[in-house]
Image (tube, rainbow, N blue to C red; front, side, top):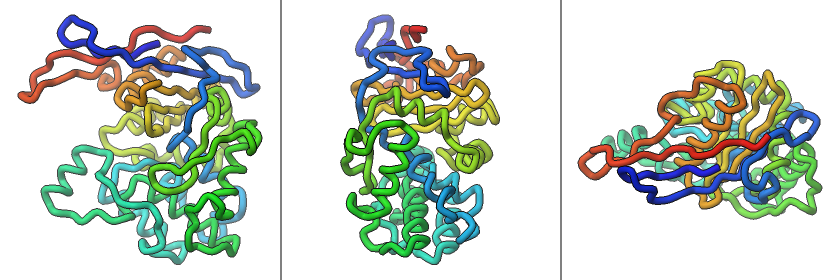
Length: 313
């Protein structure tokens, strides 16, 4: 499978895609490229980093809401409503924005970013797309009596607990998971696509339900994760990761999907996951994800990105 960029009628570039589709028993039911391709899961691992909140009594201790849990799994767009909810989440656990160890960055939504630039909004840590995940990690530390300072360090009990969660749901021993530092400063995990896909067949209801009920928090307006989940309410959870990674759970079919665009092209990964999910029966996909126009500096369409090829079953 490839995502191809056509300029006019000429192929200009090609992005190779590796895909693993796994059922709940762990059987590989479809693939493209190398289903055992090993890479960093990046933000598509967030549901499993949030899992300890649901399993350790943290929800009950702090009275966390479904919105809080959705935000702990999210790569949100820094929309004002999303940021306000993260601030409420922080307040609920007795923390403040000063406790967050994620740095600020430009919002993932171009529309939000341009709005903030126009209005001169000062971006701080709470605007990070990972601020919900970090707040969840602070909640886990407070619940267990672990230090909240330096909770992002790889050796901190919070990061070690997240590593254990990833191991449990992917069936990859801790010693075989590659660990490095993610863009937001916490641990990220390298393992085969097939094992990532398996984990997405195992998301427990306590985490799956908040994601299904709040697609607007998982990404945001105009973002692929939110668009795909809204197009098929209750049927799919989709979660983007950086560098061309995407994971999804087809709920009725009990299938897990993970893909990696080998060169890390993020726009190509959105087109690829929509195409894979459509091939697995999730139709129709939002028209914005069927192909992507390529425009010039005058806004004229001069080509398009599109998927070529499909799954081997």
